[in-house]
Length: 514
Image (tube, rainbow, N blue to C red; front, side):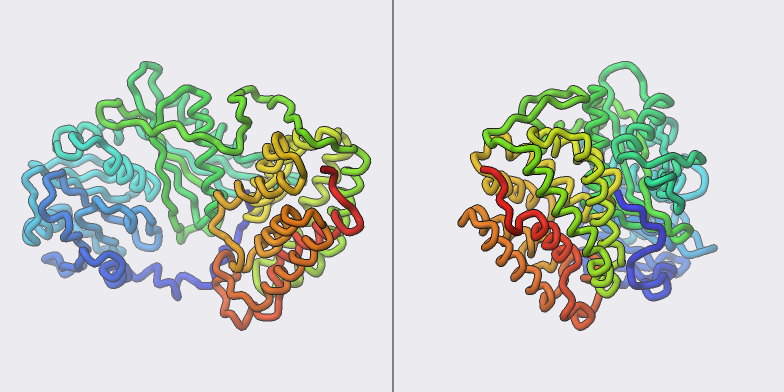
């Protein structure tokens, strides 16, 4: 998990037109052809989805706040209409209901209007229900819940009303944001009014969920834990996946049936990044729980013990030899930090060198007390340590790769084969591929050549060619993708260059066992 206080997108609010209430009414019909813009009697623009005009379900309408716009409103296909409110120009529920009726929508089953506000209200007039929820997180949660509800709930106004009444009474939330000050050598995160050390995503999520469950979740069975989490101000996809995994893992250990949904919320009040979680206990008659996910990185023995069993390998490792190799690689990365930072200052956030340097230092500290003859188990344990001290997307990629490598070493007959297995697993967790100007432009040719030839020198030569090629590649992912191609031309991808330095330090004039 990365500590980022300032937004890294190269556009300000004015350029993004976040304060323009008509922005989405202009853009959304281009994104979804079935939508069109109509005006209320007071002249306000409302986006309606004509594909739902003949729907027999209860019609759902959302009203969002300007400047704090949610990705959920854009992604939900079950919304009959949505509106972004202007400051001081609230659109009434009566106006929204009239827009739908005048536009030919079937309103016999009723209309629900969900809007974000500063307090919560539940207003029912005839078969038109207005629900005001506190903030964007709960707006996203209730929209996700209505989308996930069973078909018989969606088709019944009475059941929808009962579900929303339950939500307004029992839903609760928590918000955690990264604090601008570190606590010692680790980041800190603000849980409500408390600022505590950020030791791991697991510890932070466990703290949030334990608090939420203790205050609201009933002990009786037949309940589904509806959880919605929103990343605040744009965590990376990998970081979002880590949050989802930790939430799912916590609930599984509690033997709780659950349904988890996610969205992104942009806040114009704070640039701090973090996450919010909303929780509501829902009877299973309204919501079907999701199937429990499997973790392909986990040990195949199915153990849920807090201390994983030792991972054995067919390959014999010498503690002294492995220690020299890892130490040499880490020392090379630390030495090259200024160059990596220089490259990343030109094409990125300027933190790649520090991230890799800090990760290398942490590895060297960790192996001082580790038995490297048991390399697979050591790698598995090392990941728990690295995920705290090595932030950002780079840290997540390295942790996934090392976790996968530890598992691959269980059955691999050679180290090259294990690396190939780890690469295959990593590619399931990232969209990056060869040619996308990322660290994979170094890793993929290295692993593939080493597996094919068994020659680390040839593998390094191909990895170097891959890094050199990034000087002329257009970035498709990450911070560099926001920049004009001319800004990155001639500069290697910092992550790819940093990985090459690590590999050169480890493999030059050395060979891994197996």
